[in-house]
Amino acid sequence: MLLDRAVINAGPLVALSLAGRLDVLPALFGEFWIPEPVFHEVVFAGVGRPGANELADPQWTAHVSSVPDLDPFADC
Image (cartoon, rainbow, N blue to C red):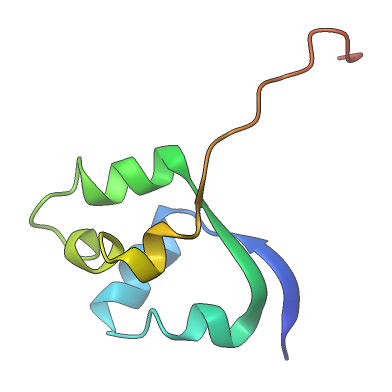
């Protein structure tokens, strides 16, 4: 089943990297994003750990997105 969109956190990225199956992300989701803090956690803080080298590849960095600024006028 192909889902429209997903935001992926560190747990699934590391688990899929360990299994050698990051390829399932584009197979499952039409669009997916890796939040910038998650990317930094896995790639930079996790140097030498599972997922770090794989996610540094341009095919995955293209899915990294920054967190949008909060609207100061939005009701909380």
